[in-house]
Image (cartoon, rainbow, N blue to C red; front, side, top):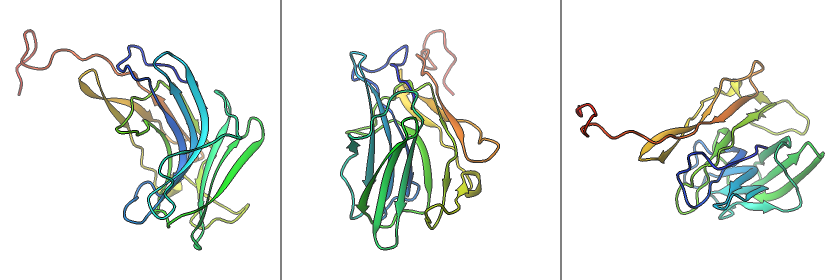
Length: 218
C-alpha cells in the first residue's frame, strides 16, 4: 500500500485521491454486466491529512452497491502488503475480499452479482465522485503474484497477467491547462504476474502556439 502525498506543484484545492484495486469485468462493463472490485483508497485532504482504508464495490448489474463500501474491520497502513480479489459463481453469487498479508488478516464479503465481463484488472486510478478526482502522488505501486481464472477452484491453478494478453493503460489528467500522463504501468515481471505502476508529476505548460515567443500554430 503506497504512502500518498500532494503533488508538487499542486493543481487542486480539493485534495488528491487514489484507489488501488483488483477486479473482474471492468474492461467490458456494459448493460447488465458487472465489475466486481476490491482494494484500498489512499487520499490526501486539502490540509495535508491522509486517509487509508480497504473497500469493495460492484458496479453495474443487480448487485450494484452504488459506491464503494468501506471495510472497517481490516486495518491497512502505508507499506503494508495488501491484496484484493473478486470472485463470481454461475449461481449469481460473488465475493469481494481484501487481505492485509502484513498482519495475516483477510476479510471476504459475500455478495449477489450479475455476471461480470470477461476481463481481469489490476489498477491504480483516480476515483470518480461527480467527476474524475485529481490523483494523489502515490509514488509507485507494485503488483505481484497476480493471476486470474475463468473458473475459481479453492487452491486451484490460475493464469498470469501475461497469459491473459496484458494491455497496459496510461492514466491521463487535465492539469495546468493540458492533458498530461500521471500514471504509467511498467513492463511485466519475468514471471508475468506483476508490474509496477508509477506516478508522474504533471507540470505547468508553456504558452500555447501563436502566443508571443511561441511557434505559429499549424
